[in-house]
Image (cartoon, rainbow, N blue to C red; front, top):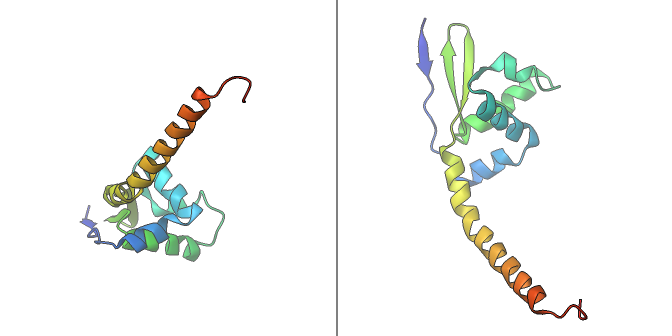
Length: 118
């Protein structure tokens, strides 16, 4: 069996966020995360859209570096590449910290209020 992996592309943050903007693409990533590598036909069967439209979603994910494609015989297997998601997490982390601090401040304020004030 001839197996050739496509190279994982170095993507920009904009490409990653644009890829994640689509509910279809997020669902593809979820399926690959939960069920492992899958042939394109198996993935496409889960979505009610024309094959060319689905292929466009896969192309966007590939270009963002979120999936890789491997040819096994006549099939193309897609696999999750989670590395770029670490970049998203790093970008979101300060916002998460911001909201944690705000919510802790609100909790402290509510805890300090008398029962009559609430």
